[in-house]
Length: 185
Image (tube, rainbow, N blue to C red; front, side, top):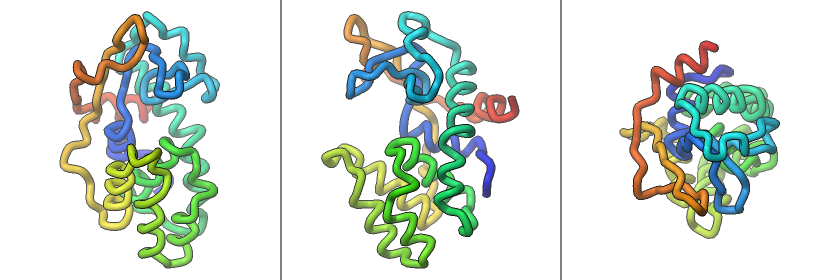
């Protein structure tokens, strides 16, 4: 599979979230939508105190996935045919870490060392343990085709004056139709 699907995007965003206005992430970087920062080439501080419709958030997030994150995933797996579930897991990993081109687990997959690949994916890039559950879900999806039962996307408001996501007031939403619209644009 070489194209994004609504299900793959929804999975990635279910692991992240959508925040409709700019916020400060855990490293004090201005961030917006599905984890978009200025490093993407899209200036996000313009959304400070300026919430955007979900459609706009998804439009930019899908554009970024398609233009800057999908190509490195496909390059990393060159010569290996990815199924939809594998593409979704690999894209989620890369969206979160940016490390798809250098990580050992991809080399192990391509060499047929699935047990080693899975162990590496499950035990590295854990952010001091905070991402262990995410890596386990990505591994289950990639290696077992085990999609989560719920791939609704969390949507969080921004708590001010600190400009942090308000995790206590979030809601999960099925965004399949909106993602399909963004993919078609």
